Image 1 (cartoon, rainbow, N blue to C red):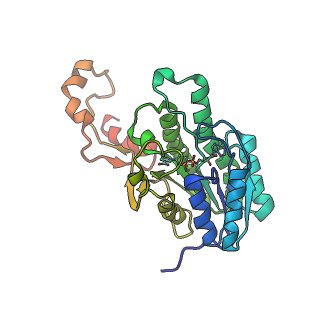
Image 2 (cartoon, helix red, strand yellow):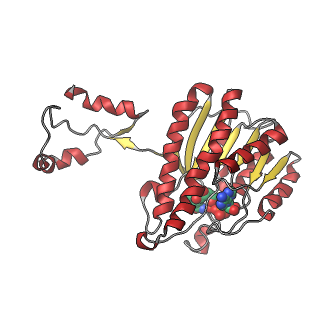
Image 3 (cartoon, helix red, strand yellow):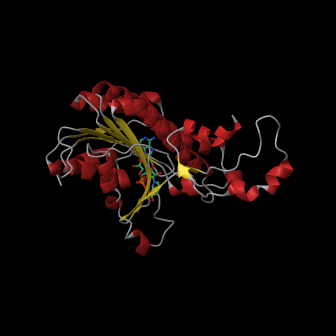
Length: 301
Ligand code: NAD
């Protein structure tokens, strides 16, 4: 098997100044990529900004002999996203890979979550992914090639306490992935999402040290590198990864029951009586698009 490499490829990683993004930057650079290290350099809760985080990682990447540049813009505006992609274009002339990784945390229960908290978290994770993807997609479309990886989370996919904005945003990036899949496939632009678990400043107070020691950010990078490579042909998939564990997760649709005849409304009592069949996940499967779900209603038309 040929070694997966990124020679002459340009990789943009948002939030690459620390944690998992920094591990990606090292892994891509060690395999020949030219890397744009974007990081606002703020605190975990999204306050503050500084150039040191991105600059430090760029300096670290010199050991691989490749080229890397820093960008300090926030992903949370389209202007910022355009500047991040312009940094790649100005330095290296193209963008082959985008890893939407930047993130902040403001964990609060629903009634304590302020509008400001909500907006900041959603702006970085969800709007931020859109704001960088849009200009990257335009370049990738022109080049007929692109790989985009969005970062979702088990909290958003499966649920957690006290993370309403984060969870909503992390499900949102799955929706954004579907959009890139639908519009990018014909241009050889593939998009997948990963749900990592790793030790970083985001998790250092939620798990015990002996567990965190096993959750190295470097253990997430191999999956992202594979998804970002020319070897990858998958698009529209969601993966869990942590400590050497990799698995696919999916939003599935079950066939359910066609109770009506598309002529009369079904009553709540009929819903009650058929609850088991409606909620059954027997024969559930992921769908290629919303259109695929229409076949389950076929008998009604
Ligand atoms: P981290 O805090 O170490 O890294 C996030 C980086 O994003 C920071 O360097 C930060 O400065 C940067 N950033 C924040 N706001 C930004 C903005 N507006 N523009 C540009 N950069 C910005 O945390 P991490 O654990 O490495 O998280 C990386 C990603 O993985 C995040 O999207 C996070 O939600 C996701 N994630 C992490 C875990 C985990 O277990 N660590 C679990 C699920 C999802």
